[in-house]
Amino acid sequence: MSDPFLELERVHVWRGEEAEVAALDDVSLSFRQGESVAILGPNGSGKSTLLQLLVGGLRPEVRDESYCRLFGEERWCIDELRERIGVVMPEEVARFDPEELAFDVVLTAFRGAYGRVRTMRFSKTERIAASRAVDRLGIGHLVNREFGALSSGERRRFLIARALAPDPGVLVLDEPSTALDFAAATELSDILRELIRDGHTLVLVTHHPGEIPPEIERVVMLKEGRVHADGPARTWLTSEHLSGLFGLPLRARWSGGWCHVRGAS
Image 1 (cartoon, one colour):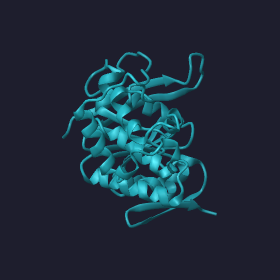
Image 2 (cartoon, helix red, strand yellow; image 1 turned 135 degrees about the vertical axis):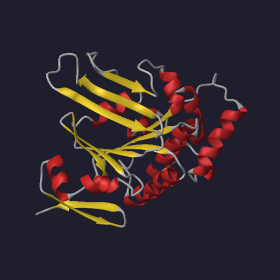
Image 3 (cartoon, one colour; image 1 turned 30 degrees about the vertical axis):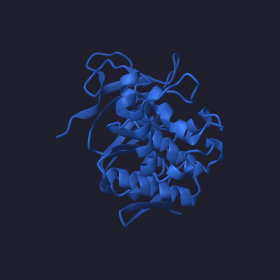
Image 4 (cartoon, one colour; image 1 turned 180 degrees about the horizontal axis):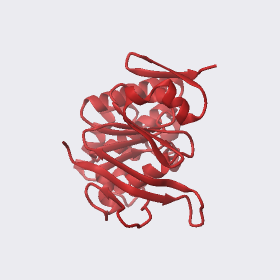
């Protein structure tokens, strides 16, 4: 078995300093390198909090017999994690100046910045790595365009290239198809499937079962801050279990390795 990159044991995280409801309540999970996982759940289920634990942005409540380990460590440096975990979030689009060159968006991954300033210098090795990531996403012809002039799908590809440029061991994608039209979402899905087939470890955070590609065989369902289910996608992505997760009657149908879900009425 490969080494775990995330280990949670009875983890508890509050929504705020004076919150009465936990964002994560007694959660135990383990994700291993080489294993791609989908985290599925409705809004407010704890997906975003789990993601923040995964990327080192949050620390859980300190309790006996409880721990949160990233790559085997309970203490970590954000700069070091940035090299090991690539993250793509929809809100990152708005963090860049629309006039930023698309290629500079990718380069800033090496500085943990959301914009290039004049004093930033990048090595030949970093530029080559950024170019390889861009070429892999099929957007090399767009590198000299302004980021804001690109389509939503093209901007999302550059963000993925940005996450891949430092060659991380794990790639985390939070609601990757948000704000994309059908064509762009389909193209993005093809990219994710190719990344998994090429050996990348993906963590896909979503509230749409239909976004989970066939290459992701494990699904973790979250509901009200707890693990509702954890195991093979084929076992848990069913009408019964999805209806219980989302709290309404749903009908699931499998076709071509995909789970298609619609209302049961």
